[in-house]
Amino acid sequence: MKKHLLLLAGVALATGLFVGAQASLAAGKPITVTGTVTITEDDDWNITAVMLTEDSGAIYHITMDAKGKALGSDMDGNKVSVTGMLAEKDGAKWLTVANYKAVEED
Image (cartoon, rainbow, N blue to C red; front, side, top):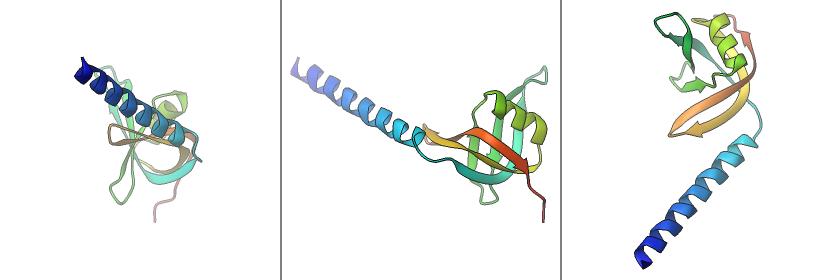
């Protein structure tokens, strides 16, 4: 019984730390990332995922809300500057788009 209580307390502590870390990221300031947009589509040509890849190779998964879908639809294959809120989930960077604009290639 004591082992179960300790395990439960450990899980509760880990969950609290994770939620606290997520809340602090959500309360952060917007960031701006520049990179190339790529999309993934299903068999019916619906966009199922949008990613932004920086020149350094860093990858940002785009939240698939209305602005994220618009980014993928408008800018697939193009270099863009995206401003939004950053979150990390399971070791991946997720960017919720506030706005974006095309960037001239050098």
